[in-house]
Image 1 (tube, helix red, strand yellow):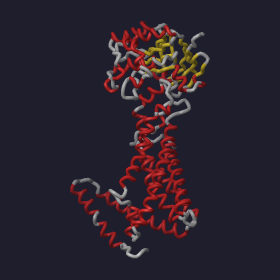
Image 2: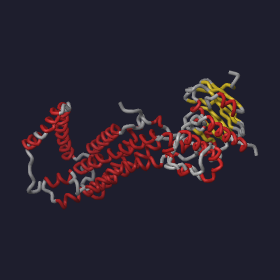
Image 3: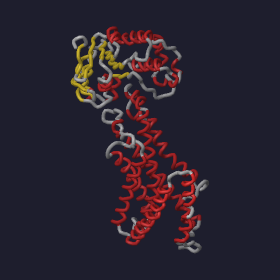
Image 4: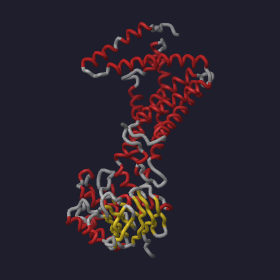
Length: 203
Length: 269
């Protein structure tokens, strides 16, 4: 069975376009660009969170033809500062007890499910929101500055943990403003401009 | 008029208006700068009620179906307008007015029709002497509840945007992601009516019942009307709140189950 490729064709967001690219399964594609150029808006369009023009495909499946919640279950957007809707950490997971190994890899204690969300630090929030998304086992992850709130050491641990998803043929689309991080994690690097996407190094 | 009823003269009203001096004194003593608005409000009250009396008298005398229908329409229009004005963050554009307006109209007319056709059955059934005051009482309460419900829903959606979208990005349905906010909006809108029913007769004697007693009606008769009115108001409020909140919820999303906060009007200036 071949794993479907993720394709973005002539997408226009509120910040510009057309944006066209292909992301291969089991690979990490990084998108860089100055702040305000619309990196988050592009990821939001890919997850169909904002109205946009153009088509997005997962294999033969077209975004516009797929029920929206089904699409978002397969193409999960992880914002830099994700929201929480219940009191404790565990309520945001199907079964956090089954994720002990991942918690350890991210430097979090196994009992953090009982923690009230209100007392989480921004770094804890970010790692738990990554884990919450990864636990859904979607074929595509849209990561918006996934280590922005982490110290250097924790960021490296989180990077490696995220890159391990590639073994399960997950497609990683990774927005970062950190060139060194892009160097470390990318199989393919793009630069976002208002008028389109460029290959990094060719711009 | 039943025996024992007092007849108010204009001198009596002038005497009552002396109480406004307390208001004026307070305004002067603390420099509230309310003297002008106070005078205007008092004059408005007198003029508006006098005009109302003339209009109602004419309406009751003619008993025309067309005039009654027009009056009802005007009342519904004003109710929708006043409700829109009370919502801190209404829907943008026409929907800000149309959604609460339609909810109020459907709930008000349904309840009024039910009351006129079953409990009251005046002849003709649309007799303005019954239809107009009852609709007025219903709208007074419904407007408040609908404004509370819509405002609560839009303000919560704006404030909780990140948390709502956190559920959407994980593949949750929009209705599920909005569930607690929907419940909160409906509860906020319905609670005043529940509190009113619970407190009526203990803390306060409703204005309508007071009026009937003052004009010589026996308390036993007055409470029957009061009960009917409160129950009508409660029913109309529930129906209107349901329609208004669900209608607003629908406008907050689209066919792709996105959270469309761009459809909420900006802060009022």
